[in-house]
Amino acid sequence: MSENVKVAVRVRPFNSREKERNAVLCIKMSGYSTYISNPEELNSEPRQFAFDYSYWSHDGFEEQPNGYLSPANPNYADQKAVFSNLGEGLLSNAWKGYNCSLFAYGQTGSGKSYSMVGFGINLGIVPVTCERLFEDISKKKSEGSSTEYQVKLSMMEIYNEQVRDLLNASTLTIKGGMKVRQDPKQGFY
Image (cartoon, rainbow, N blue to C red; front, top):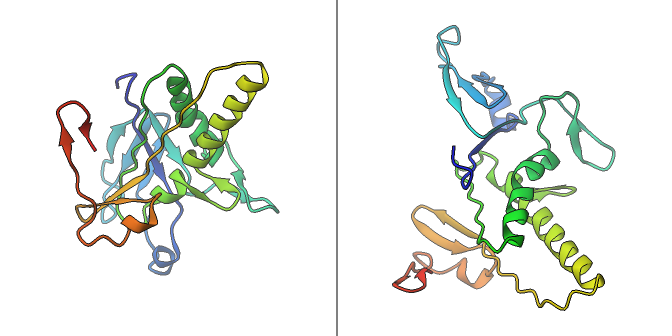
């Protein structure tokens, strides 16, 4: 995989509907590899896929009194582990002056929002990255830096081929979604 693009996959716990239906776990992870078996033929040879990161979050966690889901075994990837691997790199590259993007893909209910935004004390990559970014800016200013900082952030959702700006509530109700435009100098916007 390229050092400029990282690909990660994360397996979430079964939801209540899957538990009610006695869903079969057909995924295993080992290191950077993810193995998927046919749920109808679990004894068949699993297919192997390699990623930069394979996060096991299906089980192996303990809910702390404050609600944080912490690892109960070394295989469990909590929000901190995901941020450490992905968010730290975003921040490092942003401080080097690079534009950075984080892209989550998956079907509805697959855990994208939890990984990206989180819930309660289990903050996702986006809020932790923003928090760290502004902490870093404050630290640099307190150390006497006279540099002026400008932060731009957008959070878009593409669903049913419609684009919505998740940080601007007025665009959430636009029929047909937002328009995607292209400029020869600015690119897509």
